[in-house]
Image (cartoon, rainbow, N blue to C red; front, side, top):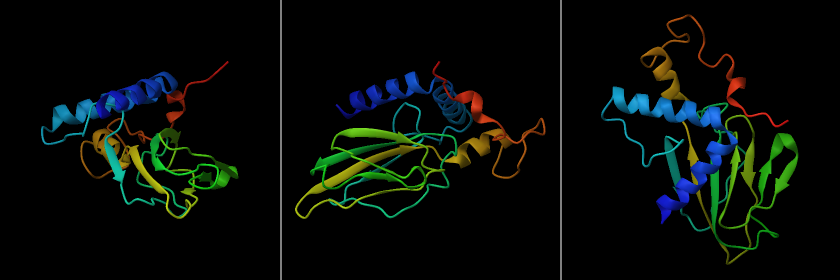
Length: 169
């Protein structure tokens, strides 16, 4: 059941961010082929997943600075709480707080936007599943190992990711 739901989320990601999704998926496949010990928890456009199962999951303002800067992070909210009274996702630089109902997913560039959740009410429950990509994996691929700032052609791998974003006309 979880695999089916994750595949549905992946298909949404693929439709919204086709080039980025293909870049990530192809990169992860290349890592798997080069290193048989490298494994992901499931097939899809994310290399990592975190299950926040504490019961009243809430976080302080932060940026996920080790995530792929131009990548998307998918946050799925779970639990039983009133989303009008708490659990909002705050995107600080944008100056907005978004109601975040249970069993919904929000995608955001978590490495470049400061974000956090508003606390829920007493007696309520909130959990989350967060899917993301570590930038270190892509750096490793670009440089053939853990060190260096430029690929073999002399270009920095992060110079211009703008071609990976879809544009609506």
